[in-house]
Image 1 (cartoon, rainbow, N blue to C red):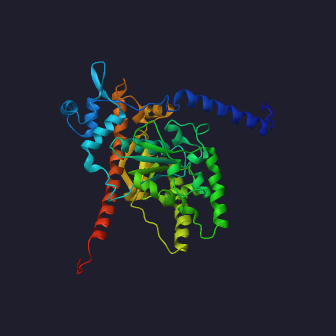
Image 2 (cartoon, helix red, strand yellow):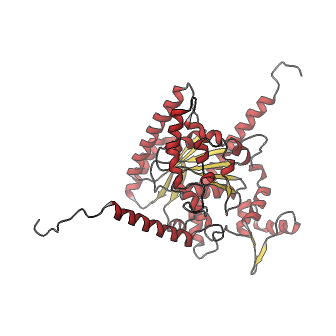
Image 3 (cartoon, one colour):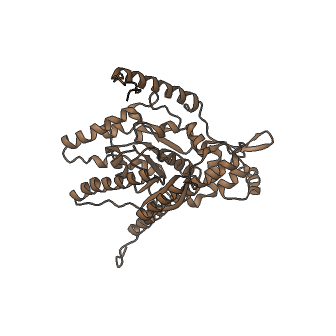
Length: 405
């Protein structure tokens, strides 16, 4: 111990406050310069081949359909035609009309993306899922319930400076309104609207339990579910991103959902944390419902392997543990760990934000393919819920057997 330099406790709260302020300033600068609000962040454009792929038609049909005049004809970019996101979604809604929701027969479906831990691609998955569904013609609402506002950031809104209280779920939690509609704002991405989050959303963790104690008959876990009723009529899919904890807002997001998606890397610590998440969730929420003589049923609970590195021998073993633990809940889609996805994240976006005509187009396509498969899988389940709603409505309309009208 003679050569060891003595270490003194010299770092106080004042110094930590300086560090926190400096770090916040750096983050603000990075966000402002790299992603920024709608004036800087722009949606993708699509050439004829990409548009044909979105619509599920042969490329040769695009030119013919464009000349008919019923759909946007695109604009020239040099020697080729390009279509904006808005125009492309019009094409998709025309050619994939049979895959769209009939508002007269079914309501929008709520999908909550949740995990106990951060760093598992939860927010990126939520954003990419919303973008992918919008590219299939659906109208999507994304709700950020994490005070850190990561999903809000991905959609080009700065949580610290561009989000007011009434643009979050906080008024719902405070009992100032019973509808989410007043908090909704458009985003740079056509077909996706946003209920944002900001640090002020931490107050929800105090408001909800306080109301539970003081308001007779108040059920804190149903606040978001009730507030989403009008939005279910307006939107085809509502995607909720949650904090990396079993908070009051996370419980609300899960209870409001018809389907749950858990991104889970094949990592031992992440796997152990996921088991803790479900144990706590079933203990807390199951107790709440049983106390009231009720039950909660989900149409689907999906576990998707994320950040998968096929070359990692250890992760292959953990992958098998996950398959054994969650059995049929593990969906046949894996999100690989790729450098291009990391690049997109560093630029506060997803693989759907990146230029498909870039020099990395082939690499990007491989990365996008995995998310496309995930979107296809979720879309199929959502369509199943719509079909169930339509069947129930039809049954209610049919006259009872033996009753004359």
